[in-house]
Length: 121
Length: 108
Image (cartoon, rainbow over all chains, first blue to last red):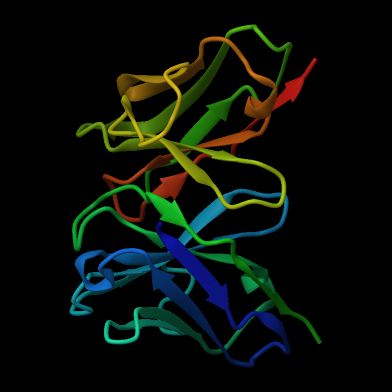
C-alpha cells in the first residue's frame, strides 16, 4: 500500500525557515517523481515544486522560486521541502504527492495527509 | 499560465441524481492532460480521472470524464452519499500545472 506521511509543519515567524519531510512507503521511491502542493484551508490547490525520481531535475512555482528548495534522499525514501524567507502568504497545508512516473508531465496519483504551515508573528 | 474555471461553484443535488461538473481552460489542453480529484473535508485530494477520461485505480464506474481542448466534464451517473465533496480539475500540460478553484457538491 502506498503511503506518504508529511511532517515538519508548524508556526514560524515571517522571514523564518522550516523544513518539511515526506516519508514514503509501499513503492520503489526512486522510480517516481514527487511534488509538493499546498492549499490554504478552505481554498484551492497550488502546485509548489516537483523533483524527478533521480533528483536530477527540480521545478518551482514562481511564487516560491529562490526561497524554497526541494530534495530527496532515495536511500531513506524521503522527500524534503526547505522553505526560507517565509511569508504570511505561504500559510497553507502542504501535501506531498506522487506522480506515476519518474519524470514528465503527469497527474498526482497518491497524496499524503498534509502538514500545516502557519507564518505569523 | 493556463487558468481553469470550474462551474458551478456549488451544485446541490440528491442521492441517485446525475451530476455534471464543468472545467473550462483558458487555452487548449491539447494532450488531454486533464485530471479530476475529489476532496472530502479534512482529507487529502483523491485522484478520480486522468488523461481527461481514464478512471484511476479503484474508482467506481459511476464516475466518468469527457471533453477535449478547452472544455472538460466530470459526470457522476448516480450520486451516492459518499460522493458529496469538493471536486477539483487540474491541467498538467502547461507549466506551471494549475488547478481549478473547485466545485462543491452538496446534498439538496
